[in-house]
Amino acid sequence: MQIYDRNGYQIYRISTIRCKCYLICHEGKSVLIDTATPIERRKITSAIKTYAKGRLDGIFLTHNHGDHAGNAQALSKKYGCRVYVSHLGSLNLLIGRPGIPKGLSPTGRFFERMATSLSKIYDVSLYEPCQNVHIISVDVVKEIIGEEVVVIDTPGHSRDSLSFVVCDDVALVGDIMGKGIVSMFPIFGEDEEIIIRSWLQLLDTKCQYFAPSHTRIITREMLEKQLEKER
Ligand SMILES: [Zn+2]
Image (cartoon, rainbow, N blue to C red):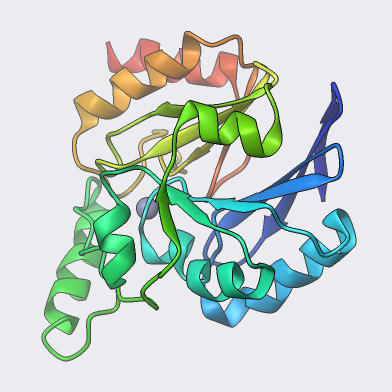
């Protein structure tokens, strides 16, 4: 589904059960933001075929958790492109082992406990190790998909969390914003204070829309209201 078309940039949302991935297309080139899990690989490849004529120039990961990095190795191999991630997540990606994220809410803590006990039998967070891992930078992003896409560090959900700002208008924010009836905090995270700092950093851009990986698009106004509540 196309969610953006301005200044020669198109953004398509690929909704899978575990994670919303985004395809950014610009002047015949395209990059995939996040890759979902192996059972939903087909959905991703079919979207690349439909929206990007089967061409992929790079895979950018918002962070190294399994629901975002699960197809990184397979898609990198299929399209012959590199996988870019923050230097803080590169080692986990190379070994396919991100570790179990910390629960921030009661639901998050419940899943954390469950995953920790299960990990004695099978580590649910594991995924296929990625061989073609490279460190992301502002220059690399510009070189691959043009001047109007900027990567910024937005830690708090995980240490390596990144956001991608397109045309200073919309930001693809991974898991730094989550769904909640009363809160926009993700259910898993490293630290609430750091999350708030990342939200403020996103508000420092001119972005009007924030597109997270597990919930609907959040407007600048909604984020500002949430921040008021936290103060
Ligand atoms: Zn995550």
